[in-house]
Each structure stands twice: as C-alpha cells, then as structure tokens.
Image (cartoon, rainbow over all chains, first blue to last red; front, side):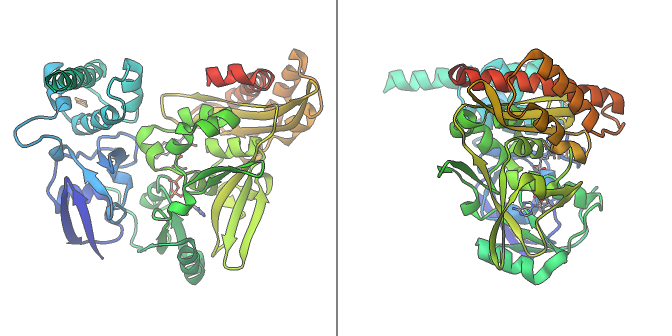
Length: 163
Length: 296
Ligand SMILES: Cc1cc2nc3c(=O)[nH]c(=O)nc-3n(C[C@H](O)[C@H](O)[C@H](O)COP(=O)(O)OP(=O)(O)OC[C@H]3O[C@@H](n4cnc5c(N)ncnc54)[C@H](O)[C@@H]3O)c2cc1C
Ligand code: FES
Ligand code: FES
C-alpha cells in the first residue's frame, strides 16, 4: 500500500506492507536512525517518537496508522544548528552515557515541557516511566529535563522584559 | 525482529463503514484500536487476523458525556483522556486510581477503554473497574445496538459478547448519589501488569452499602466479577469485621495461577487484602465525597 507520512514537518510517500511498523519505516525507509529500537515488545521505550506532539512507542504503531498525523523524531528536535533546550540540558547535566535511551527520553521530555513548562521531579519521573535507561540511574535525565525547563522559563522572562 | 504476519489494512471513516467492513470479512477481521494488545499478540502469532479495521479516525467514539444519570464513554477514549478527565474523577475515583497505574504514559496515549474491555485479559485493570461499577457495554452491529451488562460481556479469558460483524461503541456508567469507589493494585514495578488488584464501588444509603460492585484483576477470569463478595456486602452496614469477612470471601472465590508475577497462594492472599483496602477507601469516599475530591 502507498502511504504518506509527515515526519519532522515533511511529507514522505512510500510503498509499504500493511504490517510495516513505524519504527522500521523511520529507520529503514527514511534512514532516520536516531529513533532506536530495542525490545520490540512495547516495554523498553527506546523507540518513542511524538505523534501529534505526544509520546508513542513506534514499535507498536503501524506506519500506515501514522498517515494523517505529525510524527516528530529526535532529528526534528534541533532548529538547524540550534539545539533544543532539552538536548542542551542532556549535555549540561550529563544526561546520557551509552545514548541508547536518549532520543526517546529527550522526546518525552520535550512533550512534557510543551504541556507543563515547570514540572516537579516527580512529574518528570512519571513522564519517562515507560522508558528504560540501563546506564544513568535516571537522576541526570531528570536533571537534564529540569535544566531545560529552567532555561526555557528564563528565556521567556527575558523575552517578556524586552517586550 | 518481530513483525506481524501479513494482513489487509482498512481504515474506517465512520462507524457504519467499520461495521460494513467487519460484516464483510466476518471472523477474519479484527478491530484495530490503540493496537497495544493486538499488535504485540500479532507479533507473537497469538493472533493472526487477515483484515484489520482501523477505527482510530472515528472521533465520534472518543467522548465522555454525562446524560440521563449516566456517564457515557466512547470505546475509542484513550487511557490518558480518562485519567485527565475531572468529570470521570469526580464520579468515579476508581477509574483514576486504576489509570494512574495502567502501563506508562506512551502506552496510555494509545490504549483505549474499548480495546481494554474487548481484549478480555483477566489481568486488564479496566475490566475489573468496569465490573465493579456495573457498567453497560453498548455493542453495535448491522442490525442495531444492544446494551450488555459487564457480567455478561466477559465470557471468559479473551472472549466477549461482541460477535463477528459487531463492535463495542460505548461504555455507560450509572451515576448515583452517595457513591464511593476505589482501586488497589500491587505491581512489581512502575507500569507493570498487576500481581493482583481489586476494585470496589458502592453507595451509602442510610448508612448501608448498596449497589455494591467488586472486581478482581489478575486472579483468574472468575474473579473479574466477585459476586460472592458483592452479595455478602449488599444492604449491610460497613464494619471492620464485615470487611475482614469480605477479604476472606474474595480470597476464597478467586482462582489465581502461579506465574512470573508470583505464586498462586500469595495472589490469593493479595486478593483478600486488596479487597479490604479498596472497600475501606470506597466507603470513606462515599461518606465524605468532598474529602475524596481533594484527595483524588
Ligand atoms: C507495555 C504495556 C503495558 C501494559 N500494562 C497494562 C496494565 O498495567 N494494565 C492494563 O490493564 N493494561 C495494560 N496494558 C494494555 C493496554 O491497556 C492496552 O492498551 C489495552 O489492553 C488494549 O487497548 P487498545 O486500544 O490498545 O486495544 P487493541 O490492541 O487495539 O485491541 C485489543 C483487542 O480488542 C479488540 N477491540 C478493540 N477495540 C474494539 C472495539 N471498539 N470493538 C470491538 N473490538 C475491539 C481488538 O480487535 C483486539 O482484539 C499494557 C500494554 C502494554 C503494551
Ligand atoms: S522497541 Fe519499542 S518499546 Fe522497546
Ligand atoms: S544512557 Fe545508556 S541506556 Fe540510557
């Protein structure tokens, strides 16, 4: 079947089988290998991407189901050379070690901040609770997302005072 | 790499079209809602439908309305929508108790109430919740609509009253004054399926418990509707001794199996203990609804 899926703001049309999973479509067809793939059983959360702004596990979504929706992957986080504050937060707070869970963690962090600009530590932990990290012990991931929250709110205040 | 076997994909644009497709393909077709039970089962070859009818575009099935003394929840309503609905929390704190501990945020973004009930896995939290609340499932087919009480909806593990060519469109919950409800679940880790869980819903009328509903999850299909516990409690005044007795009856009436989540006798013990805890909280909430709102 022929599907058109919008990924990071661009439409991509491909001929696929109905059983083709979104994670494979992103990685194999579009060569967007930033979306990782781990357990294949909707448990580890490394395959998390955003669909219409909300985190979903792309190993458990058919590529065909993504048609008509906006998919955002880690490749769509930065604005040209300017990193998203969540990405910057992972650098500042040492939020990754091997990096396997990182794209999904950053996308869940982004989705959280878009709804809740000043999340508590518990709210951050809840938001990433469907995603496993075998390296960091989570502490620095939580700090990274909160770094981004603080940074974005400072940015908003600055913009406000300039206006 | 796990991939489902080949199938034909149909994306329905209306309930009528979905029913037409389901009618045309009969036993070969399955509804695809959130896909978070069905796709994993297809990957494992535990399910092999030839046609999937995707209902995700049917926004008319994604709604929560209060009308005529009922809360009507569309079959495509996601776990997350239920969790975030103040209306649901106000009438049925049991649903929020359960939704907080069903899977994890990305799964809750996709999974639906209709999929949960139709999956009919004895470990499904919303099945126990809907059993406790004496919900009514609205099933639609080519010949129209019928309402089926939860006790008749679940026919056994992975079996429901939804026939070939039919689909679940709505779940209706009776809204009653003086009601209270609660869900207690023990899980091994955040987002996991229950080791065991218990849901209780009731009303307090002149100090007596009425419309009592008790549903148990993960302790065998027979536990889903804990009728013996309901009968014990109906019309009685709450007391610690009665709660103890209710726990004993819950333990005795379920049939858990030993698996990776724990041995059967432990789960049996949990069924009793969690029933008591849910009962205490449900009664407290019915007695002081304002406090329950603050807590919830
Ligand atoms: C990692 C993970 C953890 C989970 N943890 C929990 C948990 O702790 N507790 C819990 O209760 N659940 C849990 N679940 C299950 C989750 O709640 C699922 O989303 C739910 O069971 C199925 O909903 P769905 O919309 O995804 O259904 P689908 O997978 O789309 O469908 C399930 C079945 O129902 C049928 N169906 C769906 N909708 C309809 C309809 N309207 N009419 C007729 N038939 C229909 C389908 O044909 C299929 O047979 C978990 C799932 C995952 C992947
Ligand atoms: S690969 Fe999707 S959840 Fe693990
Ligand atoms: S950084 Fe290695 S899994 Fe998270």
